[in-house]
Image 1 (spheres, helix red, strand yellow):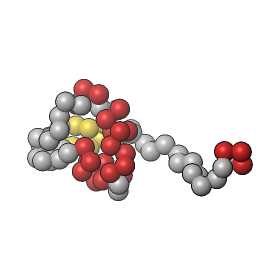
Image 2 (cartoon, one colour):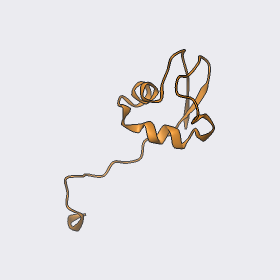
Image 3 (tube, one colour):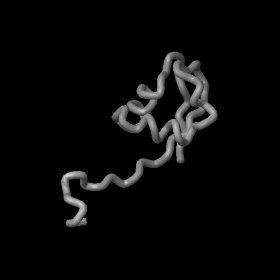
Image 4 (cartoon, one colour):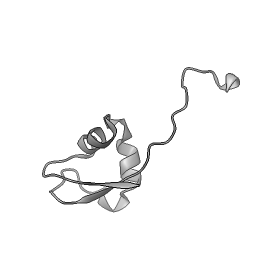
Length: 66
């Protein structure tokens, strides 16, 4: 797990985009930073835990073929 240090004005979706290249992992960041969930707009210098991305499954393959 790595960390990200916020800059003034960061939001969860911005942090996700900066560290993962997409905002779709907001939930993953929030799950690993439970103590920060009440923050919507971050001030500078807050350390965010950044977990590794889970391996993605092929969504276009039917379950019976997996």
